[in-house]
Image (cartoon, rainbow, N blue to C red):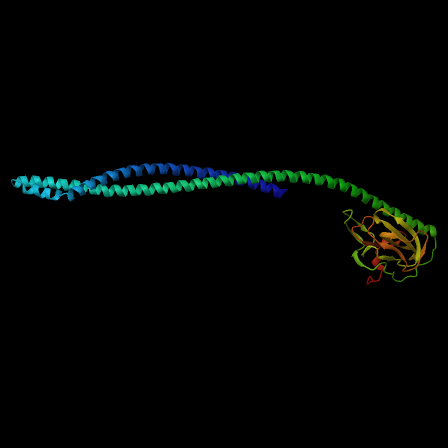
Length: 344
């Protein structure tokens, strides 16, 4: 959710920045177009003056080619005296200055025209570049706007999905917690029942001692003790040791004794408990949970190593394994104290 909100904010910022840049580029394009129009007018004026000057110089060149220089000499030769010569020289000099001015004007107007042409060309390129930039910024703004809208829609969908998932999770959580409370109550009922059996049965013999037989061939996957339960998603006492093994693997009685419980037990699934007699003043019992099949029944006497069931994943289980317990008057204790240290 925060990531989607950041994308929306960034998209909106990109839209605002792109629109501002597009507006700025548009203003530069308009200014460049005005400058181009101004310089283009200057060029047209300078071009006209250059054309006039070139026509005038062409006339001077034509007159020179047609012999006007000889005409000037004839004017001086035909002078009647010194004063007349001076007057005629003044006229010739004035004519030559006029012609030189026309030539200078041609050179000047040509330079002015070229400068105006260069400025107009530069202004035109600047206008085109600014207009292209403005169009690019505007396209970017539109793309950013589309991205912002998509991000907003994605955020709305994400929020709706999250709310729906939360509703489902809450409803499932309530169900799981109800199952957990039932599992806790079931554990108390098991303790009470096993304790009651020990009292009712009185002296049923003594457990001969020694290590228990490993009930199944597999590997330890979870220890006895407080842990985060992956099924109920709460911290609670894990009352046994889990031994992972393929489904259907034989489960053996860890010691000789009498079956005192064999049947379904909610979170434990198919569950069997065997009483082995007195140990340290308490009834010593082993229990076997999550079986796929139970092969014994209440009251049956079983020998050490006898197959009493099959590995399964019934009840509150997340995979094939045997949940193995050691209990004293129904109270669970760590099975690793009584199993072979090699777990073999």
